[in-house]
Length: 220
Image (cartoon, rainbow, N blue to C red; front, side, top):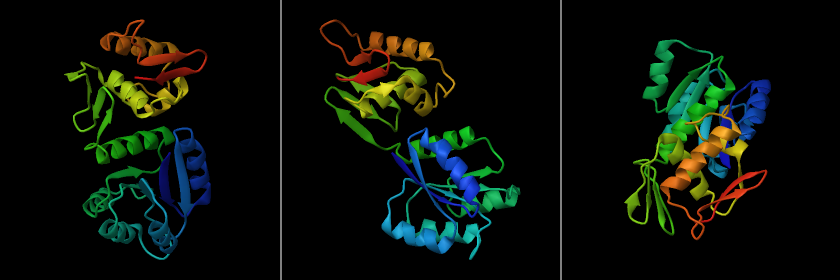
């Protein structure tokens, strides 16, 4: 589960976004003050920070600067201050993205997924006969690079990284940016079918198992 530190002095916004992000396997720890946030960073592990700029104790820009000096954690600034100067300054101080309020929560999810993928882009995962190269967005099977569309790559990558875990179609729709949360079960099934064809699956060799009424499980 993705652990997110949300530094936001409006508890209603934090509660709203926490509930929404939980659908995407993201857990939010909301903290209202910079001093408490800095203390939490010393103790807890976070995958990403969502930072408001209008905070008590100190301005969010100064806090961004302090965090970037000490931690290599992706930062998304989420602020009602939409002036271009603030955006430029935030990015110059080390923020990875700047999302002006108000915004649709689904856009925040997309921004989070994009930033996390960028941070993890150098990772290479090997699972028996499969290698997932996230930097090149490639999957190699038995020493051959698979010819995959973006949606096929992201779905197969997700299944491989969640090997032996049953993944629902809703989970795939909510965690694969290339198809979007609104994608139908049928469209996901079609993409899975194309992946199976490219893997040259047969009765004697099955990599993706269908779990009837639920979704899929990678057993390669």
